[in-house]
Amino acid sequence: MNTPTPQPGRVFAFFSCKGGVGTTLLTVTLGYLLAQQWQRRVLVVDWVRPYGDAALWLTSEEPRSDLQELLSQPERLDPTLLRSALLMPQSRLAVLPAAQDGSATIPAGAAQHLLALARHQFDCILCDCGRVQDTLILEVLRCADRLLPLLQPTLPMMRDARRLLATLREAGIAHDRMVPLVNRGPAAPHILQQDMLEQALGSRIRHRLPDAARLARLLHSRAQAEWPKALLHLANALARPQPRQDPMPGLLQRWWRKQWRWNPSSPDQEAP
Ligand SMILES: Nc1ncnc2c1ncn2[C@@H]1O[C@H](COP(=O)(O)OP(=O)(O)O)[C@@H](O)[C@H]1O
Ligand SMILES: [Mg+2]
Image (tube, rainbow, N blue to C red):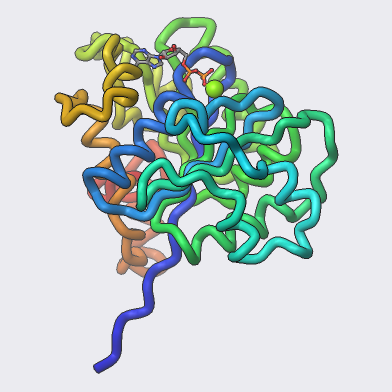
């Protein structure tokens, strides 16, 4: 009997236009949930340079290597070398710690190579990209299946997020892969506020994560805690396998897309 070929893992890039928005906390919490509750093989990669702290949230183990060491010699990078650099807080959860040296140059194409290798070994690759401020992060965003910009619903942040998304669009990064996340907003926003936010970003907001004062503590205590529902909903969406190809061909597909003002995915094909 033929065994089905495993699907390559999916890459999710979390980023923000400002620090302190919750990019790292959400990346690591979702990594933990996907490994623990959805039994996915998860890799968290910390692309923040310098001072990335994703590994610190998940383990007290000392890094043996880091992203910089792996990426500086892409020609040597193979599955064994990748494995040797990973910290394993749990059997299904791996972390690749951030580069210690923020100034070293990383050859173009190295990030793409690393992510291609990781797709063969993991179901979900969660990238903490921090702020989008160099070509390395742009390369990660280009490779990602889903881009998850985080923002808090304040006017300055909405303005900055709008500018960032416009810049990314100009850089050729497809808008239809964007899944904006509102973090620490009110659980039930006013409909006008929601509409304004969606108009500003040019995307639907499907995920709003509440301010959960205990979130960081839950992650550390490893308790079987009551995780916020919105977070579980998002983890569930990330855990789903790659959606099938849209069955609607050519003209019909274009017509359907026109009816839907937000983006080219059809309304019933929930992202991510
Ligand atoms: N939804 C949330 N509820 C409560 N605290 C949060 C939430 N998101 C982030 N935080 C807190 O905000 C602070 C900054 O988060 P962090 O993930 O380090 O931001 P970033 O990586 O974007 O700089 C942390 O202390 C974190 O615990
Ligand atoms: Mg961070």
